[in-house]
Length: 377
Image 1 (spheres, rainbow, N blue to C red):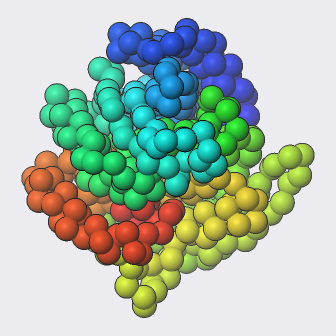
Image 2: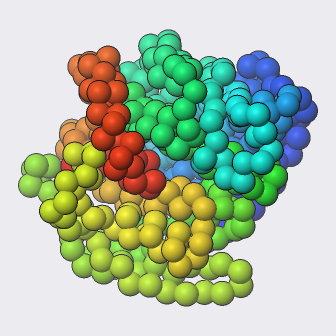
């Protein structure tokens, strides 16, 4: 179902991105996003919760790079309207790599850099619609990633991406796409990276299928998940618990197909980690470990994070389709800490606390952990 969608998405976006010669203007970027979003040939009605991601990197001056990225979230008929509804998070930023001899840096994660410019496209709309107000979020985003002195790519930008989850997890994930694409570009000069994903529920077998196709490690891989039985919302949201069982993961990569059975749900761990929400080992962490260690994939967080979001939140979409909109809204709110879901939070206080904990962050930094939106509370 998504194989054709990925191929069409790849071809369509690649053709439209061919206009990017030299530094891209904000107007050209907004026009590009509008064209992609309006292309209904990329819609798949059978998908409950769909996601498309893209990032493109180009050098515009000596050691100065521009990255354009977007994430499109699509929702099946019945979730928000009687037709497919799509929301987009478009981000464009200029990154400068510092040092006397940047060309000698083999891994961009070890580089010193600054985000010189960042732009949140005019088409931005988070999952809460008008509550995800661009005029409010854009200045906060610029302040969040503004240069405050040079710092390593890993410790400066990564923690800012994690902090961005409190603003909007779609913004944080799109920043992570840009991060991942820049990482691959620095190593391979491959300019573009693509992602297509979606969830589909089979009522007769109580099975959720999640399919993710991406090339954020430089080569195409397809990851297909089967979750059965799939725990849906029934009554009080506070009483909901994910089923603990086995998930079948089938991976198609380099003309090979391999299957893995993974535990679902999560296990508590006793060791205290830097981030309070990271005291569990989730299926997401196991997926990331499998992709990074067994398949030697860069940017494994892209697939692991996408799985966690689609698997966890699809039950909320199913509840909306069934007419249980209040229950679904409460569940989705409980699964997020972003400003759109919780307008009452004080971002200034949160960012101050995160800054105060930076010494601990620097000493206990775990690469994948800090790209994980806090959907498991």
